[in-house]
Image 1 (cartoon, helix red, strand yellow):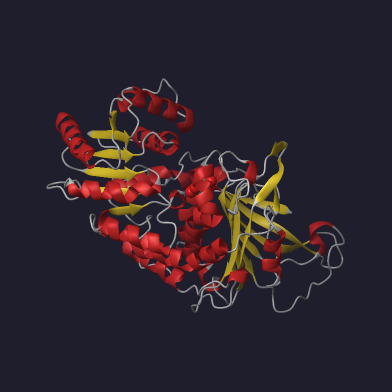
Image 2 (spheres, rainbow, N blue to C red):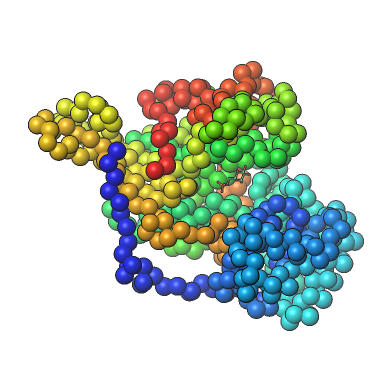
Length: 518
Ligand code: BG6
C-alpha cells in the first residue's frame, strides 16, 4: 500500500519545552523483591535514566530488600543491570556516584521482627544522607507477599510517619480475581490511604499509550467522528512472539487473560473509549476510565475464546509448545491466548463491537489499536483495480501502533493514476514516532517511577477500576476453570492464534487485522 510520511520539522521540535518536570523531594526508595529480574532489568535502569536527566533529588537512596543474604554485590549487580539493560556506558560519569546510593537489606517478608530492623536501617541512612522521612515502598515481590508486607509496614508505623510523605507502589498482578482483588484492596487501604497507593501498569508509562489521549483530546478533527455513528468496530491486539521465558510457575497460575487482557489491554480500551476528562488531573482521568469499564455488560462465555500454543516456528527458530516449557504441567490447561468481544453500553459506543486479544508466541510482536470506520453510504466508485490490494474498496482505518514501529496511520482510498475507470486503491498517511521525534529510550517505568515519587496518580490504577475489570472477567475465568479445554494446544507457535478466535469475529461480519506493524 502506498504510504505518505508525516513528520515534524526541527523548528517545531525546538519549541518543545524541555526539563519542566517536577523533581521529587529527597527520599528513600525501598524495593521489596529486589533480587528479581524486574529490579535489575527495568527499575534500576529507569532510575538511572532519571538521574542522567537530572530528575532525581540530590539526597536520594535506593534500598533493595529481599530474602537472600546479599551484601555489596547487590549494588555491583545493579550496576551491571543498568549497563546491560539501560544502554548505559560503563564509563558514564554519573554511574559510580549513583551506585553509591544503592544498598541492600536482607529480610524475610513474613518475619515481623525484621521490619523493625528495616525501619532502623532506613532511619540510619536518612540521617547519614540528610534525607528526612519521605519513603516510597515498591512491592516487586511475588503477589502472595503484598498483603503481609503492607501489614508489617503499618505495624512498624512506617506507613504514616510524622513529617514525611510515604507511598506504596504495587506491581501487577493486583489480585487474581474479583474476591482476591477486593481483599487486597481492603488490606492495603487499612494501612495506606488511597492517595498513597500506586497500582502500577507499565503500559500507562508508554509514550504511545499516553499519546492516545493527546491524539484524541488535543486535536479537534477526530472527536466528532469518534462514536457509534462513524465507527464500525475497534480491534485491540497485544501480540508477543515471546513464550513464557522461564516464568512457567507464575504463568501456569496466570494465563493470558489475567496476565495481559484484564490489565494492559483494558487500559488501552479505556483510553480509546473514555469521554474527554475535564483535566489531566488524576481524579478526572480515572473517573472517566471507570465509567467506560462500568458500562461494559457481562461478556457471554461464547464471546470469549482461549488458546494455547503448540510447537512451531518463530521466524527461523523452532520453538517448543507451551506444555513443553520449563516447569509447566505437560497437561496444562492454561491459556496463552485470550480474545473477547465486548460492547460498551453508553451513548457514544452502543452497538460498536470491541474485539480484544492477547497472545504469546504469535506471528509478530505488535500492540496495536485499529479503529475501522463505516463505509460511505453509497459507493459510487465501485470499479476496482484488477489486482493487488486494490481489489476491493476498503473502509477507512485508523491504526495506533503502540509498539514496536510506534506511530499512527490513516488508511483512505485514492484514485489510481492513469486509469480511465476511477479505480480506487487504499493508501496510508503514516506518522512515525522515531522519524518525527527520534527514538525514545523510555521503557515506561521512568515516567511511572517519577510520577509515584512526586505523588501524581494519573497514570496509576484506582481501587475501583481494578475491581471493575476483575468483576468483568472473573465469570469467564471461573467458567474456563470449570471446564478444562479438550483441544489444547490449538494454535501453532508463530501463527495468529486459534481458529475459534477467527470465528468470534466472523460472527460479527469482521476479520482480525493481521498485517500489523509498518
Ligand atoms: C507483563 C506480562 O505485564 O507484560 C508479560 O506479565 C508480558 O507476560 C509483558 O510479556 C508485556 O509487556 P511489553 O511492555 O513487553 O509489551
